[in-house]
Amino acid sequence: MSVELTMLAYCVALLLVLIVIQVVAGIRTQGLMPLANSRDDLPPPGVFQARAGRVVQNHREGLTMMAPLLLMVAVMDASSPLTVLGAQLFFYSRVAHAVVYLAGLPLIRPLIWGVGLAGIVMVLAHLLGFA
Image (cartoon, rainbow, N blue to C red):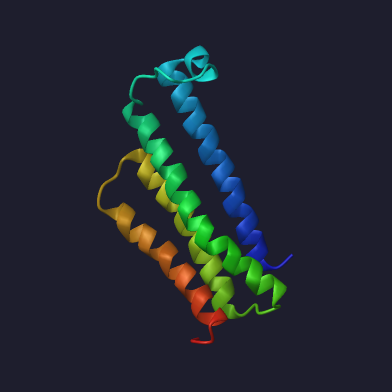
């Protein structure tokens, strides 16, 4: 398996871990039974539960851009040092972003997010022939 597809698989694994964190936070905040029911009358999520939900949504948004690009690289057999670096930057920045976001650390989170975006742009630029 290529480095790009390996990084994509790691990104999916990270999403699974983040979803589990979100679920556990929800259970701890609101209880198992309320979450197992219709959830029509749930109180607002707790601080950490809401933060975990945002980190999951943010990672999903990034994956909706990066996954098709990495699959295109694989199908087109267009791997290059730039696509490898872009995929690695995306994955490792997403791990760092999740840790920093869940910890509630301010200011550094947007910088880490920008590194992930740069990884997306690197792969896209290669596919479009700009790099």
